[in-house]
Image (cartoon, rainbow, N blue to C red; front, side, top):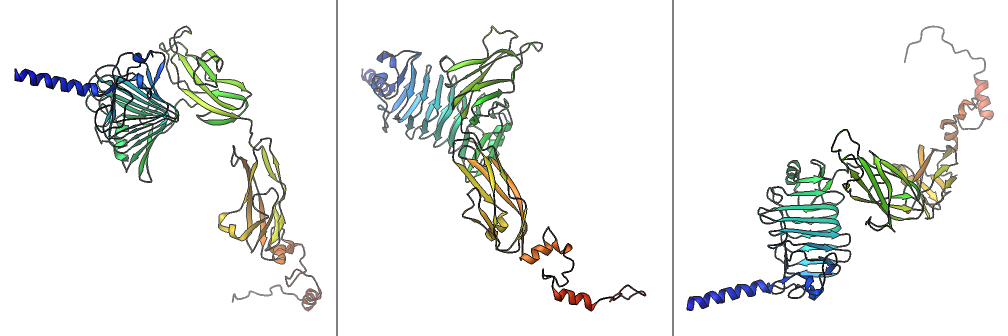
Length: 495
């Protein structure tokens, strides 16, 4: 009887521990897919919003209710730790702009023993207070997509650490890592892929990273070897080398409004080599191409298409996507490409700058007026910079400054020929255009006349004493040697 009572007490105790966690179940609040629920709404949890406490009571956040609505974090959220995919599908956690998730000093798992997906969008931040496990145990498939946000890991990272499968995709944004195991942080079928994001890892871990790269565990745009690792200021900085799709405009590039040519490299192969690829291109002001008011198909079913020109009249941020039909027909579901962005601006760069002042000979402390003509149709204020070789910059002054269109330049000593450069840009287009001229600074006015590039001494050959004045002294020199014949009469010893 006593044993039965003890067993019942043990079962009851375990049940109380299990129930102490709070489980994501927004269906209890009337929220079902495709609707989404907010982390900080108490009714979306079985035991209220998770708290940053030291025990499991309301500190452990569990995701294991099948077909639960997506969990969105749009403000500050905390928990002792979270377990996503604990015995059943863990669904999706999405951290959006303004959202933060901070866990305590316990490990957390995206994919504990089942599938799970976490997405960190631009402006969102997740900080793991201890280890970050992605696809921890057998049967789990965990995926972390960093789409412009930031993820911080305070201790170890593990993808497939204990037999599961983990995927981390740093599509854009930052992944900050405190540590990585030399061999066990990316195991089995797990992979870490980098596109336009960057990974910062404490210490010099280039050898470990290069080993993972060589093994195909860390890839760039899905390609083995397309990853670089550098040790900079105490951290190993890991990036993808290049985007093999070669999108133009490049990701995040700013281009003028007007005709914009979108171009790319097709990376997929047709199912039948004899068939063409059929290409669709979507363009809009919203990343969701299902919003027809803000997204339109600008190229449809183009055989092996690699470019399309569009006319954009309004400044702003634009999104474009290349979809590919690989089965030789246009009626199949295409394979969707990634969404690229670029900005358009009516703030055009300066068109040209020309130094009208010709190459000029002057001398020490004799100023020269510079004259530049700038053509600019943009809206931003211009930035102008006159410069010379840094080695002689201290010997040259621009008055009233080196940032006006037509300054006066003065050299303080014999500098010889120097190159003077003017560079013109604006806030959107720094260092857009430039021009140069030669300024020859002689020691003195006379030295300039006799030794500069004009070589006036070759014109005024009667200046026998070289003082740049032809007078009676020069005539006296002439008459003192009048009719003297100094041609050689016989071989002359060399002194």
